[in-house]
Amino acid sequence: MEYKQLPLRVTIEWLRATYADGALTPEDVIHEMIRRAEEDAAMNIWITPPRMERIRPYLDRLHSVDPSELPLWGIPFAIKDNIDCAGVPTTAGCPDYQYLPTESATVVERLIAAGGIPLGKTNLDQFATGLVGVRSPYGETHNALKGEYISGGSSSGSAVAVARGHAAFALGTDTAGSGRVPAALNGIVGFKPSLGAWSNKGVVPASASLDCVTVFVNSLEDARTVDAVVRGRDGNDPWSKEVPRLKPAKPTVLLVPKEPLQYFGPHAAEYERAWHRAVERLNGMGVRCEAIDTGMFSEAAALLYDGPYVDERWAALGGFVDTHPGSTLPVTETILRSGQAADYKGVDLFRALHRLQRFRLETEKLLKDAVLVMPTAGGTWTREQVRADPIGTNAKMGLYTNHCNLLDLCAVAVPSDPIGEDLPFGITFFALAGHEGLAYGSAQTFLHSAPWPDEDQGESASTLVAVCGLHMRGYPLEKQMLAYGARFVREDKTAPAYELFKLATTPPRPGLIRKGAGGASIHVELWEMPSESFGAFVAGIAAPLGIGKVELQDGTEVPGFLCESYAEAMGENVTELGSWHAVMAR
Image 1 (cartoon, rainbow, N blue to C red):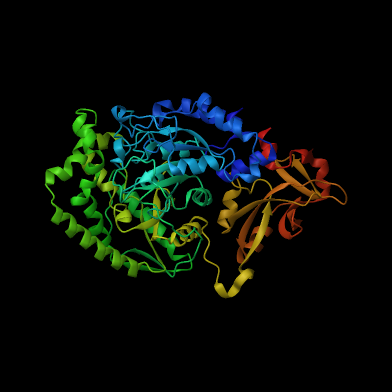
Image 2: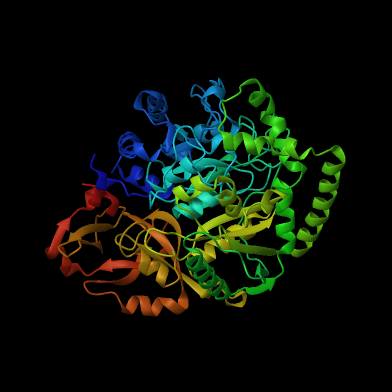
């Protein structure tokens, strides 16, 4: 298989459509992902890298299962190496801690049951104690875009595996920001559900009361797909809860910090400008944007490492550290022993708990039907800078993340405008526990640069558009759809009445022609475009293409790309391939 057949950044939806068209098989995809992992070996992304002999049983079982019955049929994913996968060593980033689990973590079990293919185990900051991605005896994980910079931690390998095309999605964990900071630094999406919504059974604890399994993806929609599979109470997990399903919703207000923020690192000024640009976009989303004092969130965040909560890490791992001297990295041991060094007592813990409870009450009042937005990080560092100051640089990375789990919030971290070439910048949307839909809906609107439709306009505020070629996700003109405020809705197929042509243009374009008799069903994507943008969009389409009514497989008709019949003589009939994905994969 040639590299060009698989996009660098793979999505679940793209793979589903490609499998359905027969353009690729799961085995094709796995071979390419193994090749990429081997090619990137020097980036220290994997601890247990993908190998075909270990993956083969998962591929073989797909032959006996109808793809339509499993939402993740053939979808390859990576696992942070503090999460168990049966038969694969768990190290938590410490060779002497290694054990071989006989059972998978609940989240991994659910993903496999849904048809997902576990590829291997990814690198991390040892025992998940870091936000930088360089605290591992298995090597410093390089940033996916600019290798001299940090990848973010502790879920470093998982984020970089997704950004480098080694997996369609990857599991991480998050106690202080580990499911969000690596997403921002590698230009991808990080989704952190409410505490307990995803089971922690089979996860090496960092701070058990605050730990959360997360997912890294290349599209926000993929996060929702994974969430739908793994969400749900686990009766064998004491921290598991029944949390409402994610349903995108519109908040009443977006809250942003009023006070000047702290920026740091070699690109502090660029980060500040990027945040101001993000706030301008937030103000254009059609929801009231209000600046508030966020000092309370900073005070809450300080409790994580500057108070007795730090002893929870020692409660989980102190026994191992004491009985295995020299097995942990010096910086890791310093963090784990910091609670002991401060000599916190029971009264200190209760004072912290009571203070935190007051913060939670105030947060519930403030975020009722609202979403808080902050930079995911206020800067970044080179790996060399972190080596020179491992504690100080790491602490800065958590300025806008540490409050989240302490206050029982959910979060969605998404890319915003980059600060420069191969230097991404990201923001995070926070909502109360059980209100992922508010954070998700806000992030979705932000990413698609489209305002919320006016409620009194109803259905007339937007129109569906069927696209079958270069305007689909992952192709050159997707950016045109986004520029007109369109958002992807779903995959679909036409009625069996069309022929598809590959037009002799540069680059090649698809021509969808309705036939009076015969024809086939052709794969399309449905996008929702604001009505106010639709006219300008149509006016920019050059002949022989145009917009007409396209009949879908269920008999409904939507506006979509069609081609004038005279163009048949200008191109190759590729109807039998069934989709533009298959045409491009030849």
